[in-house]
Length: 309
Image (cartoon, rainbow, N blue to C red):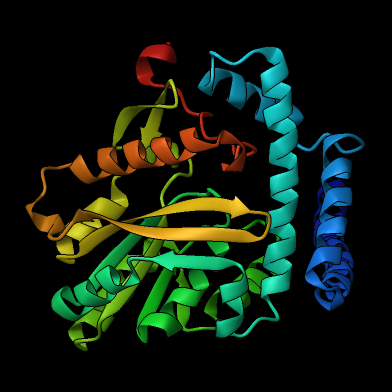
């Protein structure tokens, strides 16, 4: 490849990202203006486009489902894949609609159980980690800081398109959550701890780690799964209490958030116990209705050393 070709390609990529984001913003503005029932009509259309003309990550989704649910027939897998596309479209529409909501408006989308448990631990321990997965609609976690009147860190991996990154960060930070990348998480948390501030850390821990970040392999959804213990190590150093967030999709556009105790004192736990506990809890959440997990994610792109030979 010549230098001129590389330069041309490099120029085209940012332009394509800007154009793609401009089209997204135009569509998002239209969806935000629609009443909720009509927004879900758009979701139905979007789901059909994702599945058929686009075939968005069709092979990844079906392969993930087949490996994770080997007892399901081919017809079951196709039905689950279709339901997943509809749910993914719903989540996209709900994220867009939520950008214009005030904190009280989230009650139309989320019922919260056991919030007093989190509030009590914040008073007692000051530092609380909330562990969730990409199940149901995880973006409504943004409403927790104003409900608890606390500062919050939302740990995230940025998307490749910087325009979408800014859009999502603005949405996640509107109610007091500060979006932070994993490599800056502990430093920022320590700054707040030194100020004596009660701090809530929101962590989605079910993404595939970088190859050099794999700390252990766990049997998860019938497959050997590489897991990072980075968040657990930070929880131990921060002397944090740890809570699992069990998300249920009760109806279209209505979710239930249920907080469940994992550990009052992370520093007292045996190494990797919390990681294993989190994976087991998430697996149970997914088993309740598999269609609502993020099957388009390449969770099993890494293989254990024994399988890589």
